[in-house]
Image (tube, rainbow, N blue to C red; front, side):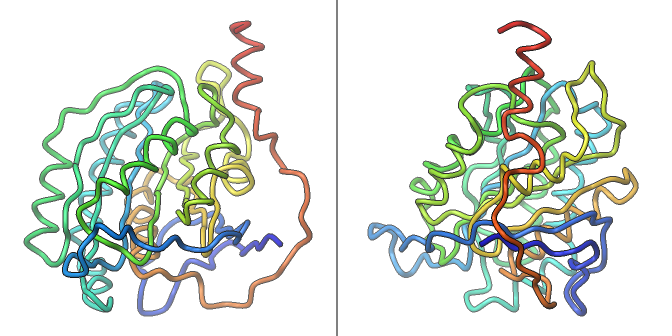
Length: 283
Protein backbone atom coordinates (compact mmCIF):
# COMPACT_ATOMS: atom_id res chain seq x y z
CA UNK A 1 0.00 0.00 0.00
CA UNK A 2 1.19 3.45 -0.83
CA UNK A 3 0.34 6.59 1.13
CA UNK A 4 0.12 10.14 -0.15
CA UNK A 5 -0.16 13.34 1.84
CA UNK A 6 -1.42 16.59 0.39
CA UNK A 7 0.31 19.95 0.01
CA UNK A 8 0.92 21.85 3.21
CA UNK A 9 0.93 18.79 5.47
CA UNK A 10 4.49 19.51 6.51
CA UNK A 11 3.50 22.51 8.62
CA UNK A 12 3.60 20.87 12.04
CA UNK A 13 2.54 23.12 14.89
CA UNK A 14 5.30 23.80 17.34
CA UNK A 15 7.95 22.07 15.22
CA UNK A 16 8.40 23.77 11.88
CA UNK A 17 8.85 27.43 11.10
CA UNK A 18 7.45 26.87 7.61
CA UNK A 19 8.76 26.24 4.11
CA UNK A 20 7.64 26.19 0.53
CA UNK A 21 6.48 22.63 0.44
CA UNK A 22 4.80 21.40 -2.69
CA UNK A 23 4.16 17.84 -1.55
CA UNK A 24 4.97 15.09 0.88
CA UNK A 25 4.68 11.42 0.15
CA UNK A 26 5.32 8.30 2.15
CA UNK A 27 5.22 5.32 -0.22
CA UNK A 28 6.27 1.76 0.20
CA UNK A 29 6.38 1.42 3.97
CA UNK A 30 7.78 -2.01 3.42
CA UNK A 31 10.71 -3.43 5.26
CA UNK A 32 11.63 -2.97 8.88
CA UNK A 33 14.37 -0.90 10.33
CA UNK A 34 17.48 -3.01 10.49
CA UNK A 35 18.97 -3.67 13.89
CA UNK A 36 22.11 -1.66 14.61
CA UNK A 37 25.44 -3.25 13.90
CA UNK A 38 26.62 -5.39 16.78
CA UNK A 39 30.09 -3.89 16.69
CA UNK A 40 28.80 -0.41 17.51
CA UNK A 41 29.00 0.07 21.28
CA UNK A 42 25.89 1.02 23.23
CA UNK A 43 27.74 4.04 24.63
CA UNK A 44 27.81 5.50 21.12
CA UNK A 45 24.03 5.47 20.68
CA UNK A 46 22.42 8.28 18.67
CA UNK A 47 18.80 8.87 17.72
CA UNK A 48 19.37 8.89 13.96
CA UNK A 49 22.19 8.27 11.51
CA UNK A 50 21.70 10.78 8.71
CA UNK A 51 23.40 10.74 5.31
CA UNK A 52 22.94 14.01 3.40
CA UNK A 53 23.46 13.45 -0.34
CA UNK A 54 23.60 16.66 -2.37
CA UNK A 55 23.39 16.99 -6.18
CA UNK A 56 26.20 19.03 -7.79
CA UNK A 57 25.49 18.21 -11.43
CA UNK A 58 25.85 20.92 -14.09
CA UNK A 59 22.08 21.41 -14.21
CA UNK A 60 22.47 23.08 -10.81
CA UNK A 61 23.67 26.66 -11.32
CA UNK A 62 26.29 28.16 -9.02
CA UNK A 63 23.71 30.24 -7.19
CA UNK A 64 21.63 27.15 -6.42
CA UNK A 65 24.70 25.28 -5.21
CA UNK A 66 25.62 28.14 -2.89
CA UNK A 67 22.08 28.44 -1.51
CA UNK A 68 21.95 24.68 -1.01
CA UNK A 69 25.18 24.70 0.99
CA UNK A 70 24.08 27.67 3.06
CA UNK A 71 20.68 26.10 3.60
CA UNK A 72 22.08 22.96 5.19
CA UNK A 73 24.65 24.88 7.25
CA UNK A 74 22.07 27.34 8.57
CA UNK A 75 19.51 24.61 9.25
CA UNK A 76 21.93 22.65 11.44
CA UNK A 77 22.61 25.65 13.70
CA UNK A 78 19.02 26.95 13.74
CA UNK A 79 17.11 27.31 16.98
CA UNK A 80 14.38 24.99 15.70
CA UNK A 81 16.87 22.24 14.82
CA UNK A 82 18.62 22.43 18.19
CA UNK A 83 15.26 22.34 19.99
CA UNK A 84 14.26 19.24 18.04
CA UNK A 85 17.62 17.67 18.91
CA UNK A 86 17.12 18.29 22.64
CA UNK A 87 13.70 16.64 22.48
CA UNK A 88 15.14 13.30 21.33
CA UNK A 89 15.75 10.44 23.79
CA UNK A 90 19.53 10.62 23.38
CA UNK A 91 19.66 14.26 22.29
CA UNK A 92 22.16 13.61 19.52
CA UNK A 93 22.50 12.44 15.94
CA UNK A 94 25.35 11.44 13.65
CA UNK A 95 25.60 12.99 10.20
CA UNK A 96 27.73 12.74 7.08
CA UNK A 97 27.44 14.99 4.00
CA UNK A 98 28.53 14.16 0.48
CA UNK A 99 28.11 15.62 -3.00
CA UNK A 100 27.25 13.51 -6.02
CA UNK A 101 26.89 13.68 -9.80
CA UNK A 102 27.75 10.72 -12.12
CA UNK A 103 27.63 7.08 -11.07
CA UNK A 104 31.22 7.09 -9.77
CA UNK A 105 31.40 10.75 -8.78
CA UNK A 106 30.76 11.18 -5.07
CA UNK A 107 32.80 13.31 -2.71
CA UNK A 108 32.49 13.26 1.06
CA UNK A 109 32.49 16.81 2.38
CA UNK A 110 31.79 15.94 6.03
CA UNK A 111 32.80 12.50 7.35
CA UNK A 112 30.64 11.12 10.16
CA UNK A 113 30.22 13.74 12.85
CA UNK A 114 28.27 13.80 16.10
CA UNK A 115 25.84 16.67 16.65
CA UNK A 116 24.71 16.95 20.25
CA UNK A 117 24.35 20.68 20.79
CA UNK A 118 25.30 24.18 19.58
CA UNK A 119 29.08 23.59 19.62
CA UNK A 120 29.10 20.48 17.49
CA UNK A 121 26.40 21.93 15.22
CA UNK A 122 28.53 25.03 14.64
CA UNK A 123 31.55 22.86 13.84
CA UNK A 124 29.64 20.83 11.23
CA UNK A 125 28.11 23.94 9.67
CA UNK A 126 31.57 25.52 9.38
CA UNK A 127 32.94 22.41 7.68
CA UNK A 128 30.13 22.49 5.13
CA UNK A 129 30.73 26.13 4.26
CA UNK A 130 34.51 26.07 3.99
CA UNK A 131 34.71 23.49 1.18
CA UNK A 132 34.94 25.02 -2.33
CA UNK A 133 31.82 24.59 -4.46
CA UNK A 134 32.20 22.23 -7.42
CA UNK A 135 30.10 21.02 -10.34
CA UNK A 136 30.26 17.79 -12.33
CA UNK A 137 28.54 16.01 -15.21
CA UNK A 138 25.61 13.55 -15.24
CA UNK A 139 23.00 12.74 -12.60
CA UNK A 140 23.11 9.37 -10.89
CA UNK A 141 20.64 9.10 -8.02
CA UNK A 142 21.21 5.36 -8.03
CA UNK A 143 24.96 5.97 -7.68
CA UNK A 144 24.29 8.27 -4.72
CA UNK A 145 22.13 5.67 -2.98
CA UNK A 146 24.65 2.89 -3.64
CA UNK A 147 27.46 5.10 -2.30
CA UNK A 148 25.43 6.05 0.78
CA UNK A 149 24.48 2.54 1.92
CA UNK A 150 27.93 1.30 3.06
CA UNK A 151 28.57 4.61 4.83
CA UNK A 152 26.32 3.42 7.65
CA UNK A 153 28.72 0.56 8.31
CA UNK A 154 31.52 3.11 8.78
CA UNK A 155 29.57 5.25 11.24
CA UNK A 156 31.12 4.95 14.75
CA UNK A 157 27.69 5.72 16.25
CA UNK A 158 24.63 3.50 16.50
CA UNK A 159 21.24 4.91 15.57
CA UNK A 160 17.74 3.53 15.92
CA UNK A 161 16.96 5.11 12.52
CA UNK A 162 19.05 5.30 9.36
CA UNK A 163 18.10 7.93 6.79
CA UNK A 164 19.43 9.02 3.39
CA UNK A 165 18.44 12.60 2.54
CA UNK A 166 18.74 13.16 -1.25
CA UNK A 167 18.39 16.56 -2.91
CA UNK A 168 18.56 17.06 -6.67
CA UNK A 169 17.05 18.86 -9.65
CA UNK A 170 16.70 16.08 -12.20
CA UNK A 171 16.01 12.38 -12.76
CA UNK A 172 18.54 9.58 -12.80
CA UNK A 173 20.36 9.45 -16.17
CA UNK A 174 23.51 7.51 -15.33
CA UNK A 175 24.35 4.27 -13.54
CA UNK A 176 21.90 1.52 -12.67
CA UNK A 177 18.13 1.97 -12.46
CA UNK A 178 17.09 3.99 -9.44
CA UNK A 179 14.43 1.43 -8.45
CA UNK A 180 17.07 -1.26 -7.96
CA UNK A 181 19.19 0.99 -5.74
CA UNK A 182 16.15 2.05 -3.76
CA UNK A 183 15.10 -1.56 -3.26
CA UNK A 184 18.54 -2.49 -1.94
CA UNK A 185 18.41 0.35 0.59
CA UNK A 186 14.93 -0.58 1.78
CA UNK A 187 16.04 -4.18 2.31
CA UNK A 188 18.66 -2.84 4.73
CA UNK A 189 16.05 -0.91 6.69
CA UNK A 190 17.25 2.46 5.38
CA UNK A 191 14.71 5.24 4.81
CA UNK A 192 15.17 7.53 1.78
CA UNK A 193 13.71 11.05 1.77
CA UNK A 194 13.79 13.46 -1.15
CA UNK A 195 14.19 17.17 -1.79
CA UNK A 196 13.47 17.75 -5.51
CA UNK A 197 14.61 21.22 -6.57
CA UNK A 198 12.16 22.73 -9.06
CA UNK A 199 13.00 26.44 -9.07
CA UNK A 200 13.61 26.66 -12.85
CA UNK A 201 11.37 25.92 -15.80
CA UNK A 202 12.24 22.49 -17.27
CA UNK A 203 14.78 22.84 -20.08
CA UNK A 204 15.89 20.42 -22.77
CA UNK A 205 19.44 21.71 -22.45
CA UNK A 206 19.64 20.68 -18.78
CA UNK A 207 17.57 17.49 -19.17
CA UNK A 208 15.03 18.64 -16.60
CA UNK A 209 11.57 17.09 -16.48
CA UNK A 210 8.07 18.19 -15.55
CA UNK A 211 6.72 16.81 -12.27
CA UNK A 212 10.08 16.01 -10.71
CA UNK A 213 8.25 15.78 -7.39
CA UNK A 214 6.13 12.89 -8.75
CA UNK A 215 9.31 11.19 -9.94
CA UNK A 216 10.87 11.45 -6.47
CA UNK A 217 7.67 10.24 -4.82
CA UNK A 218 7.21 7.23 -7.08
CA UNK A 219 10.79 6.27 -7.91
CA UNK A 220 13.27 7.58 -5.33
CA UNK A 221 11.96 7.71 -1.77
CA UNK A 222 10.89 4.78 0.35
CA UNK A 223 10.76 3.20 3.78
CA UNK A 224 8.60 3.84 6.86
CA UNK A 225 7.68 7.50 7.16
CA UNK A 226 9.54 8.53 3.99
CA UNK A 227 8.54 11.83 2.42
CA UNK A 228 9.24 14.39 -0.29
CA UNK A 229 9.55 18.14 0.14
CA UNK A 230 9.55 20.00 -3.17
CA UNK A 231 11.21 23.40 -3.59
CA UNK A 232 9.51 25.53 -6.23
CA UNK A 233 10.46 28.98 -4.95
CA UNK A 234 14.12 29.97 -4.81
CA UNK A 235 13.34 32.34 -1.94
CA UNK A 236 12.03 29.42 0.15
CA UNK A 237 14.99 27.13 -0.55
CA UNK A 238 16.59 27.45 2.87
CA UNK A 239 13.29 27.19 4.74
CA UNK A 240 12.47 23.92 2.97
CA UNK A 241 15.86 22.44 3.84
CA UNK A 242 15.36 23.37 7.49
CA UNK A 243 11.84 21.87 7.49
CA UNK A 244 13.14 18.66 5.96
CA UNK A 245 15.93 18.26 8.51
CA UNK A 246 13.52 18.91 11.35
CA UNK A 247 11.22 16.14 10.16
CA UNK A 248 14.13 13.73 9.71
CA UNK A 249 15.67 14.44 13.10
CA UNK A 250 12.35 14.27 14.92
CA UNK A 251 11.35 11.13 13.01
CA UNK A 252 7.91 12.58 12.41
CA UNK A 253 5.39 12.72 9.63
CA UNK A 254 2.62 15.31 9.44
CA UNK A 255 0.04 14.96 12.19
CA UNK A 256 -2.98 14.50 9.96
CA UNK A 257 -5.17 11.80 8.49
CA UNK A 258 -3.45 9.79 5.76
CA UNK A 259 -5.44 8.82 2.70
CA UNK A 260 -4.49 5.44 1.19
CA UNK A 261 -4.51 4.90 -2.56
CA UNK A 262 -4.13 1.68 -4.47
CA UNK A 263 -0.75 0.66 -5.84
CA UNK A 264 -0.33 1.88 -9.41
CA UNK A 265 2.26 2.49 -12.04
CA UNK A 266 4.54 5.48 -11.38
CA UNK A 267 3.05 8.74 -12.65
CA UNK A 268 6.43 9.55 -14.23
CA UNK A 269 8.51 6.76 -15.76
CA UNK A 270 11.34 5.78 -13.43
CA UNK A 271 13.55 5.45 -16.53
CA UNK A 272 12.71 8.87 -17.99
CA UNK A 273 16.16 10.30 -17.36
CA UNK A 274 17.88 7.42 -19.09
CA UNK A 275 15.46 7.72 -22.03
CA UNK A 276 16.12 11.45 -22.43
CA UNK A 277 19.87 10.82 -22.39
CA UNK A 278 19.56 8.01 -24.94
CA UNK A 279 17.37 10.09 -27.23
CA UNK A 280 19.76 13.01 -27.04
CA UNK A 281 23.16 11.32 -27.13
CA UNK A 282 22.36 7.84 -28.44
CA UNK A 283 24.21 6.09 -25.66
